[in-house]
Length: 384
Ligand code: SAH
Ligand code: SF4
Image (cartoon, rainbow, N blue to C red):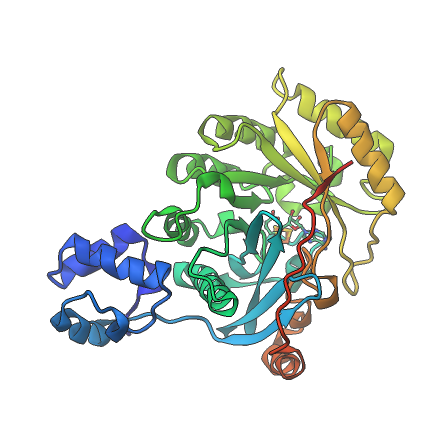
């Protein structure tokens, strides 16, 4: 098996080139061809020495993930389903807004954390994605969109690791992928425009601070351990106090001076005014001075057999109001791509039964693909 160059960050590619007897600047050239120009064939790379262009195909390749389907929402959201083999599929979602284009990327096929309100969690864990599979989602989406929009400029301006999987449980593949996103010779995204979302893998939050301190979102979902234990099983290992301590340690390295807490609104479970009060006092007093944060309320996206319901709109607004009035900036996430099930926690809902997943996904491709793409810009998350 020859190497897939999507698996390398620039240092990795330089080391690979060195083994071939090539200088570092060749690695930079190759890297720019791949990530900035979207090249997948070496004969396109006209400024590489001809001898190198001829040698490369025998030792390496640039291989994308096979697309099982692409669905385009009326609101401009686009969802891709990529085949990662053995009946597994992962999803990637592009969300256009007035001032940015955000790509939501998956880090694992399935997820081992098993949160009660998450369809990926219900699906169980299949495997970690490789760096190349994480980056292929960005590579594919960016160059597809540029071609479609006839743009030579960057279309994806923000990346959020909020697709399927727990990124901090796939740390060794995640870090080189993040480095490529940030690299000026790669996608050149600033650290504040790349967000890792985690259910709270405390030791890896500390490592991220050292290795690639991008923006951090923490999926909190509950203001006390008893409730969080029942929603996010990982809480039994890393309870709230330890998680918030890790957030405080992360802040000095973070590109923003706050942590984003995500809070999925579940009717009658975690959405009452007393939960909001408890949450407020938690984030305002933890460690003595509190945790500088913003809170993002996510309306729960139901899926079959979850046994849970989304809180009423008025309940969500009242919850947000308590937090805002208490001095913690709180927004309510807009759901996007409703017509194509592109919202959080609905990803790859169809692959619940993995035995037959690829066939059903392929059937869906026949009905869903090749619709025209429309970009309808929508406002950002609304502050309540
Ligand atoms: N594993 C990481 C990142 C992927 S999940 C994490 O948990 O943070 C991305 C976000 O979607 C998380 O905040 C998660 O809690 C939320 N989410 C999962 N299922 C959801 C659902 N059914 N409705 C609304 N949000 C959901
Ligand atoms: Fe995994 Fe995140 Fe879903 Fe929890 S919410 S099961 S951590 S993907």
